[in-house]
Amino acid sequence: MAKRYELDAAPKMPCYFKEWRDSLDWTQEELAAKMETTVAMVSRIETGERDWGKNYLEAFGYVTGCHPLAPLLTPPRSDVDVSEVLRAMGAAADFSPEILSSATSTLRSLARASEPELDPSATAQQQPKQKENP
Image 1 (spheres, rainbow, N blue to C red):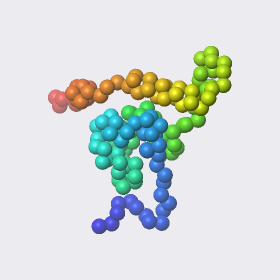
Image 2: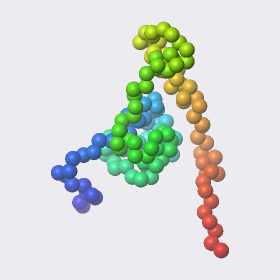
Image 3: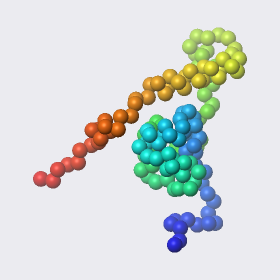
Image 4: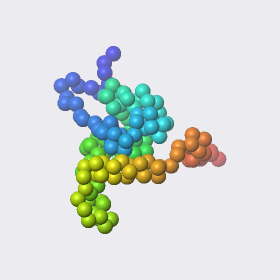
């Protein structure tokens, strides 16, 4: 059976799903739970064993907070300078790499702590109701 829509001579497009997940310090298990899919699916998408689809892009964008097309176009921004954030908050000193690493870890922990817990029973209740036929 022929592969769907695949031309061997066409250059392969890079995808940055793993980099986006890593930038959030999420494991494949955490991402799979948030997306209500399997770890195997996340792994296959990240390694290129499986093609992503529109629904995957939409779910990935929703749970990560990025635009659904972002993982296809660019790696996540990693140029946020924690020392600039600290200075903006009133700190006046230069910081050692250890302090910057600790501050980065703390900020990521705070970001994770502010994420809502996913409750599978709540998800079903939040689904939009379909219109009834008159």
